[in-house]
Image (cartoon, rainbow, N blue to C red):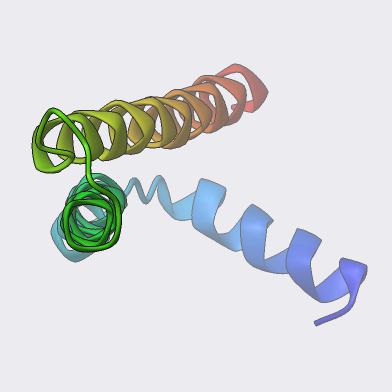
Length: 94
């Protein structure tokens, strides 16, 4: 989509006063959820593989899970922060 079409679409939306719909908000919530879940599961899988391959004196599952959760939460925070900034920018333009 070229820039003129995007600007025209944006102006039509602003003229009608449309805000984020319920389904768009629900989609964002789902995307943020997956942003947390996927790294946590990958960290857990890494912990299981460490347990199987390396002879560690501790289980690698919990550190893997916690590392994945920390990474996922940080990524989700960035995503929500960016959406918030976009909403603030749109409100300031109107």
